[in-house]
Length: 360
Image (cartoon, rainbow, N blue to C red):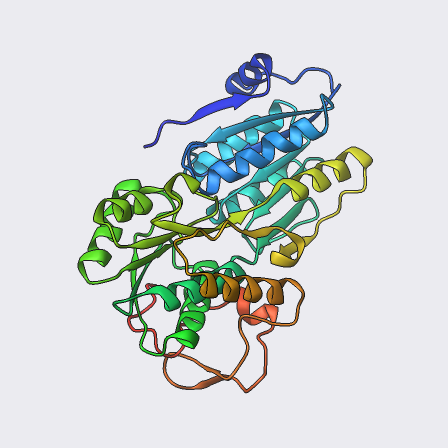
C-alpha cells in the first residue's frame, strides 16, 4: 500500500488533521483536498495541488488548506475525509473518480460540510461534481499525432476504462483519422491511474509494436521518459504540461487548470451562496488548456492544431460531429449531427476503426 502523508499550510493544521483532534475556532475557512496520487506525480495530482496553492494564495490568509496524498479509492478515502471534517474542514475536494461513493457516504454524515467530487456523476444537497472536457484537448492531440506519425501507428495508454477515458481515445482517434486515413490505434490498459512502472512498460511495448506517437491518460511522466530513451517517438503531456520533456518527445500537452474553479467554489462557501451544481467545462473557459506546441511540430501542422483549438473554444466546432459510426459499424451520428452531453457522459463504446475491446 502506498504511504499516505498529510501536509497543510501550517504545522498546527497538519497535526490537527493527522491526530483527528478538534479544530480550532473557525477564524478561517478550511478547505481539504484528497489526492489519489503523490503531489510530485508530474501530472494529475500535481496540477490539482498547484491549483490548491494558488487558491490559498488568492485568499491571502483567509483560507487554510490541508491535503492528503496517495489515498486509495475505497474505505481509506472515507477515513481521510472524516478526519478532515473532524479537524474543521468547511469544504472538501475529492479529486478522483473512485472517491465518488466514499464522498457521498461521508457527506451524508456531515450535512453542514460541502463536498466537491471531481469526474463523478453522483450528487447530493452538499455534494457537487466537476470535471473538464479533456476530450477537446484530445482532438488537438489527435490532429498533431495523425499528421506526424511516420509508421501510421499511434499508441494510447489507458488508465481505467470509464467514459472519461474512452471519450479521449475516441476523440484522439477521430481527429488523427481525419488527417491520416491510414492511421491505426493500439490501446494498452493498465487499470490504474498512476503506476509509473506499468506506464513505462506500456509505452515500451507500444514502441516495440511500431508506434512512433504515444498518448496517455495516466498520471505520471514515465511514458515521456520511455519515449525519450527510445528516440524518434513523440508524446503529449497529460493533465500537466510535462514541459521538462519538451521540445521532444513531448510536443504539446493538455493542462487541467483547476484554479479558477477552486477559487469560485471556496468563495461561494465564504459568501454562503454555495449550492450543489454539476460543472463540465473545457477549452472555452480555460479549464482545459493546450500547452505550448513546440518547434518539433512543423509550422503548418501547428497552425492547423491552433485553429482547431480556437474553433472548439469559440463553439464553432464540436469534436464529436458526424458522420460517426460505432465500432460495430452501426450509425451513431449523422452528417453534421453533434453528440449530446448525456451520451458523452456515459460513453461506453469505441468508434468505428478502433480495434480491440473495452475491458469490462
